[in-house]
Amino acid sequence: MVPKQERKVELRLRFAEFKGGPVQKTLVVGKKAPITLKDAKKMTDSILPNHYQIIPVKDDIIAGLIIRKAALKMISEKALIPILIEEAKKIMVPENIIEIDLDVSLAIRRIIDLTEKAELKGKTTLKEMSKSAKERAEKEMIIQALEKANWNKAKAARQLGIDYKTLYYKIKNYGIKKQKN
Image 1 (cartoon, rainbow, N blue to C red):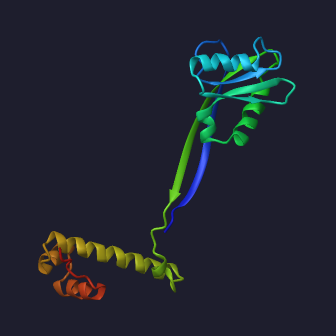
Image 2: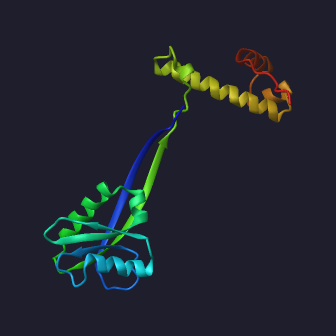
Image 3: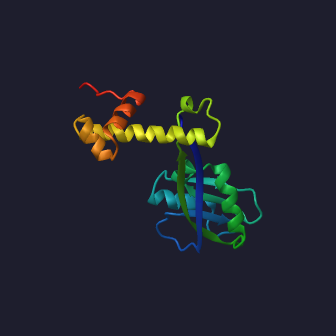
């Protein structure tokens, strides 16, 4: 059965005034900033060539963003950029260059259905499904006990705390047979 998948992206944004130096962050460049968007990109490329992408923005305050390409591989530009712009505009003026410490972490949750479809056909009540699950678990315990006892039924029955005849009946009922190697 194919696992169901649920994907969520968690964003953590920390804003600080840009001080220059090695750029490991996302830059938001204001319309009237002391350096242009292209100059800021040249600066980032001088430190880490081809690791950043310019994203021009049509806005009164923001000229554009310079963002790590790796971040855009984890979350689409269409989903990420509006969030960054919305939050940056709350604290920014056109003369600013703001750096954003962008932390993108991807959480993947998979749900695997352990019940077999064939076993559930015709079983509509919780009681019937519980009985089926109990039988599967019981069969597995019997097989483990038999293997541990080297297929000695009397020894396996003692390990399981059941009568030899009960074990014999269950082996026959579940169709348990010793696997040939």
